Image 1 (spheres, rainbow over the protein chains, first blue to last red):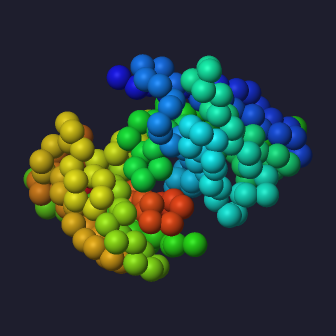
Image 2 (tube, chains in turn brown, cyan; image 1 turned 60 degrees about the horizontal axis):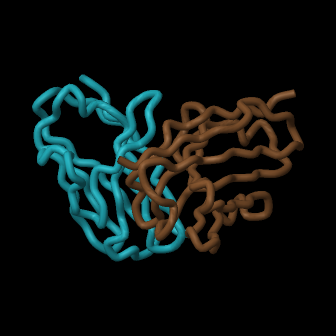
Length: 115
Length: 106
């Protein structure tokens, strides 16, 4: 059974960079797309972007200037970097497998942007 | 960008009721439409992919239909565990989600 787990700081200061890693277990990261999605407290889901195991990416246009998603196939991990964060970036961040459909999700990690 | 609009935004219903949630796309998305269920504090769960394909382990009371710009999720007989928030998501052009429909107990 494929499992995903997000890890990273739960608190980030305004203007700094949010960095999260998703570790995939129970299966290989190869041959799949991998996505990041976020959900502000009490609000809906927002797609951030995805990466193919080969490294090609696609980002939400509203976040594109601040987002980088990368993959490390040797560690079965992929990562998210979001620069110049503000309070509006406070959210639960999820990693998930897929692009056409998101069949496996991590449990999510709350990242709060605050000084 | 493709905008996804769900209706209603919230819905009160009783156990045993038949419920339908609608999702409309701002442009045609063929059948690139998925439905998710999310319970409080949990990650979303994929229920239906490609507009009508029920995922393994999902009860048959859930069904999806539609093509192009209009899609529906139907729950034929609500069970207590179905009270949750439901999201549609398109993958025809990048990804985007509907705003969600909160299904509450009447």
